[in-house]
Length: 543
Image (cartoon, rainbow, N blue to C red; front, side, top):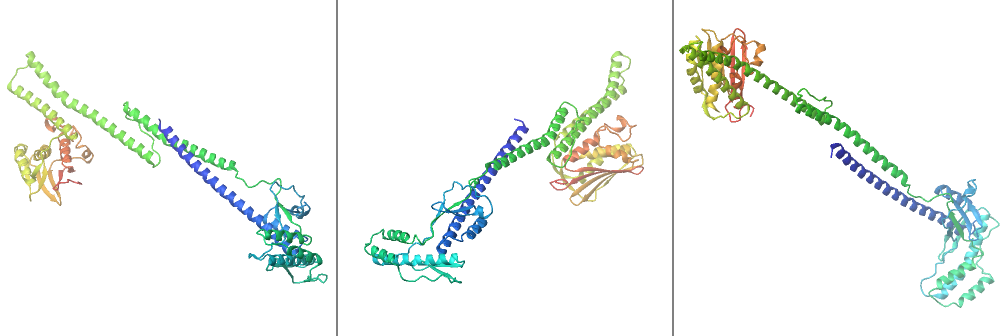
């Protein structure tokens, strides 16, 4: 499966999970809001019926209830229709608001009964309960008549239940046409009293007495009400799933679009890298990718370009090396072949001098081949080293002894400057090979009467071997090429005077394998100094 499909699938999975979570949270929150709305509606119903009951309980009539209904409708936002059980309209909030009354909704009406509930003794004293009931009937009929009179006269009426639940009417301003009820009971009450005296105690006595109470006060009490809330065109609070689904779909589409854009932004440079790598593998070493930005993809593109540069540079070095080797071997081998063919055909006499010259030429080619093998092994990390504790002073003395005859032949003084003993852990033979190559080069470029100095300096944890000559020096523009293969500072020097051109490359690789470095300083007309820097510790320079 391609990266695009995997990335798209992963992001779609994440989008689906996020969408599902969003939908679940939205539905949960909406359900909570619906439950809260239902609870609030129940509280509003309780408030409306409670205030209507309080009005009927206090006023003994439904006259003047319109302001109370209007205020309740305004506060709760409900449409309130109040009618008697016989469906006689008392008041409608739509009419109070100046609107055409709407058809009542399907919700069942709420019953409001303003008649008081008797508070009878709980102990088994039936005659006391009967007497209280008869008294309560008389008291309520008197109180209800009095409260209705006050209400119709426009007085502010308040009521509180007495000990048995009968309202006690009070007002701050009593109209003249109203009087307080008397304690005398009429003949009907007396007859009711005589009738209930014959009742005996029964567990259903309280219900019986309440029914008798309600019947006797019916003429004075306001009628029971049926309260309807809402209208036919109103709908109960429900959850609208469409907005939730629309939001979820929007989140999903946004996530998919983001996945497509992300995969495109990621895959475009990856596709360019793939094409460049394919071209590089097919031999097009000049292929590079365009790098923009500073993210991980840009870093990958930069790393690819650096790798391609390194491969191209290595390929160029390989081609140059092959050409240099062919150039170095072609001419001497052609000479050897020519002389051998001439000897074979009898055109040249095999004199001892000629044979010695041919032998020397063959040895030179052998040295070039050996140097190439050493360099290849060194660069591949396969050159064998036998490291021991080496006294650099003794090693320099050995090199001086080995090359003294060559220096004397060239008329060059070979000096040694070793003020103290310095020891390193290294391969003594390979270090002598390095120093010997530097000494041979220094003697070769130093004019007769000049000096080549071998010096040993200790700088902290570093041991510095210096080979200084008083030759003509090297121009600054040639210094970066000193360690290139087959490169010679003097283009006029050939193999006979300039060596194989591999000595400095081999020397640098040997010193690098010893975790050291070779530095060079040169002044034209003054001389050149090569410095081999080694560490006296086990870690090497920078180790």
